[in-house]
Amino acid sequence: MSLPSDKISGKQLTTLSLAALGVVFGDIGTSPLYAMRECFHGEYGIAATTANVLGVLSLIFWALLLIVSVKYLGFILRADNEGEGGILSLTALIKSKIVKPRTPQWVLVGLGVFGACLMYGDGMITPAISVLSAVEGVKNITPLLESYVVPATILILASLFLLQKRGTARVGRLFGPIMLLWFCVLAVLGIAQIVSYPQVLAAVFPWHGLNFLLANRMHGFIVLGAVFLAVTGAEAIYTDMGHFGRRPIQLVWFLIAFPALALNYFGQGALLLVRPEEVHHPFYALVPDWAMIPMVLLATMATIIASQAVITGSFSLTRQAIQLGYLPRLRITHTSFSHIGQIYVGPVNWALMLCTIGLVLGFQSSSKLAAAYGVAVSADMLITSALFFVVITKRWGWNRLTAGLLTALFFAVELPFFGANMTKLFHGAWFALAIGGFFFLIMVTWKQGREILGTKMRSLTPELDQFKKILADTPPQRINGQAVFLTRSHDIVPAALMHNLKHNKILHSEVILLNIRTEEIPRIPIIEKIEAEELGEGLFRIIAHYGFMEEPKIGTIFALARSKGVIVDMQEASFFLGREKLSISDHPKMWRWRAHLFLFLARNAMDAAAFFDIPSNQVIEVGIQLEL
Image (tube, rainbow, N blue to C red; front, side, top):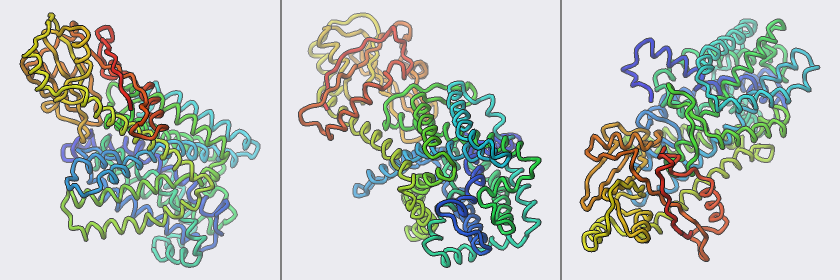
């Protein structure tokens, strides 16, 4: 978590701002490579007349202003969950604040989870289109290199994904300076062209965009799908807020990113007004011949950085989903000792790599790939706006009329973009929705399956007070030592304890019931993390509270419990874990095919001992038969 804005020194603010420039704005910062081109070139491109160029430029400028500057920088960043942002953080915030029974909470939570799932589709398409559009610049050097574009793109992407396990801490220090250079070059290229045709600046007036839509009607509406490419990456501003804080992000956007992007788009517009034949790649047409090779290299580095930010975001999203109970446990590797946010999740990395390379092979060009881009991001923005309405009315106490008018403004801007992107549904846009739907199915199946099993477990085991009475009435044979049992609930006896007592007829002299809870906030202060108490009859209870951005480790929990009076000897204690043997009943409580999916996920989940760092040579597994 970043420091509060009022506690950031000038040096820290500069460092955080430079880092934010490299991570937060990498995606939106590389959009000039393809956004303007897609408006005038390709299957749905419109003629590069003066009215059309000014109209498209006006739409791009006002989209950046209203969606990024006003919506995200002005309002959405204020809806933080204890300093963290992102759609899952917003969903957790809503889930913890809605108290009225009639409120369709499951609809809102479902929307938030689906919005998070759409980010996986974005994590696949962004690296593919960004790197491919940069490498395509070699065709401007010589057409002889055209056949090498796709192989070179695949090689770069494969190398990027293969390096994830090693971490990006060292090269990550270069992200900020490289992106600063990139934005400076964007601005310089734009200014050089604007000077030669300053009339293009008239596009700042919104009526040019409105006239464009009125004059071109359906064709103009479809072009909105290409205009939207200029703001893809805006959601990362909110997602990455927890790493850098609101102030550094706002600073670099208004001082560097927004001016550079606006100048470059206007520069491309000025070029097309003079040389409309350059619609096939107006960005590289801004570059002098002598600077083409270094420009292609710089663009490739910028797109790699943008891709890295999206990949890291997918890892972070996966960790949040695991902690909130929407995904099975997966091995999470920390790739940096100094940066807690730098993690690696193997299955996610390989899935992203295969799908990203598959997209490059399938679409072959960034122009064709652009058809698949935008639907997931525009849908995500709409979901964020809807959830934001709930936050400002339920949490901030805004008047519903005022909140409704603000949300209506966001919808008025974003709904046309979403509709325009949906026209590309059968030209590739289905892919992002299919990926989002696939992950959504996995998440809701896992969540529902665990709830079903939890209900069954509660019916099979006694409550804690009842168990204490059983021990008092019929004391079992006790042996010296400590036994630790993980339990789903603080007031229910774990099945592993009951099975051990039933079959071994003994109980350790000290039995510790450990309940690890994930709360609906990102992090829990150290002082509030642990509740520990002695219950009598040799029973002790530890309740460990963790945020969804944290990873509970057994050593840390027991170290904190010591200060609460419950001392566990990590070297000698025995850890009893329930090994669930799952099967499907004749009448499962979810569709049979979903029950099979849940069983597959459960079999491939990381075991609790490894996930919580429990010493494997001290673990005793107790088999438990359960039916879905």
